[in-house]
Each structure stands twice: as structure tokens, then as C-alpha cells.
Length: 231
Ligand SMILES: Nc1ncnc2c1ncn2[C@@H]1O[C@H](COP(=O)(O)OP(=O)(O)OP(=O)(O)O)[C@@H](O)[C@H]1O
Image (cartoon, rainbow, N blue to C red; front, top):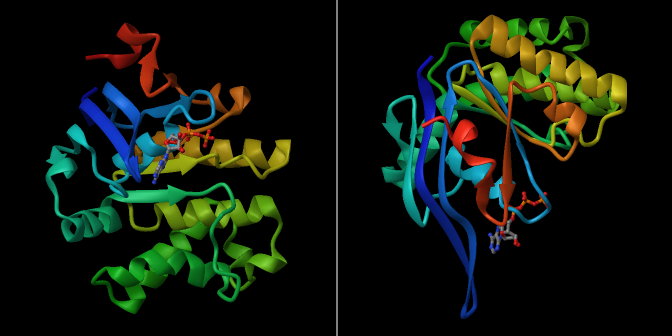
């Protein structure tokens, strides 16, 4: 297996007025292709910050991040935005669906940024909604769907562009046990059937247990080092 995500000597600080907050310090981590990794750690340990950096939503203070051989830490903001559109699928705790759009239209949204015909878009949206078992709910709006179904729409939207990696921030945080299980089964299906690499932040040990590897962060550093770093 080759690493698809390579994080090297990563530092991230934020400034608040004159104060500097060091959030991530000297982080090294690899994630393999088609690996499902859970990121755990106390509140404020830097999990979301790391996830955002890997997803190209923010840039490091120091260090490098390579994804699929591309050094995203060296990209300009517009390059990064273009890269994100094609390479990252996002799954959120509260789904982030637009309430006025149908399930179909919500899943179609990321495709509108790509040069595709409407027939190609339709095929990709129908495939993604089929994969999450919602072919019969395409015309429903989020308000007409359960929380579990909304998250399945969110997962369909994350996969519809056929991204390199899927990042999920507390994807089961708002779900009951059965819906959480369904969502985790789906994420695992994306890994097994479509070779997707999944990085999930979670506080829930049972959700984390569904990943192949758990990476623990504490005060901006990885704990449990050696075998977790795999470099
Ligand atoms: N844009 C920002 N500006 C200033 N400080 C920030 C910013 N983003 C995050 N931080 C700080 O960085 C630290 C880590 O935040 P982060 O959200 O990554 O933690 P987390 O481990 O995901 O926490 P939680 O489990 O509570 O979501 C916190 O102290 C937070 O206040």
C-alpha cells in the first residue's frame, strides 16, 4: 500500500491579537490509499484543524502536506479551491444540506463546479444516491427526510465527484445508534468498493472502532507515535 496522504513536520498557529496559539506541532502522519482512519483526542487538541489542513480548507504555518503526490501546502488559494473541488468529499455533523433543494439537487451541487454535461451530472447523481440507498427519495427536500437519510444524502454529495479523499467531521454526532451505524457502514463501503481514503474526526469510541486505525491527538501532537505514524 502506498501513502496517499503524507503530512510532514506540520505546524499550525493562529493569531488572536498579539497572542499566538500553537495548535499543531511537528506532526507527521501517513494515510494509505483506501484506508479508513479515525482522528480522536480531547476537545481543543487540534483534530478539526488537522482535518481542515488535509482537506485544503486552510494552509499550514510550516511543514508540507502531499495528497496523491500533489503538494497542496504549496498551492495558492485559487489552486487549492480548484484542487478541493476535484479531490475532496466533505461529510459534516449536521449534513449542511440546503433546505430549499431536493436530495438530487443537493447532491448535484459540487458537480456544477465541474465541466460536465447535464446528462453526465444526472448519471453521477443517480449513481451516488443509488449507492446510499436513496434512489426513491431523490425528489424529497431535507425537511422531508430523517436525520439518517439526510446524512446519507450528505455522503452521496461527498462521493459524487469521485474524490481522492473523504473527510468527515463528527459524521455520526447528530445521529441515533442505528443511523450512525448505517452511515459508518456506508463510509466503509466507499472504502471497500471504491477504494476511497476516509479520514474521520470523532469523539465516539464505537464510531472510531469502525476505522482501520485510530490516530490520537493531544495538545497538537500525535500520541502513541511509532506504529501510528508509519513512516
Ligand atoms: N481560526 C482560528 N482562530 C483562532 N484559534 C483557532 C482557530 N481555529 C481553531 N482555533 C483553536 O485551535 C485549537 C484547536 O481547535 P480544533 O477545532 O482543531 O480542536 P478539536 O480537537 O477539533 O476540538 P473539538 O473536539 O472541540 O471540536 C482550539 O484552541 C481553538 O480555539
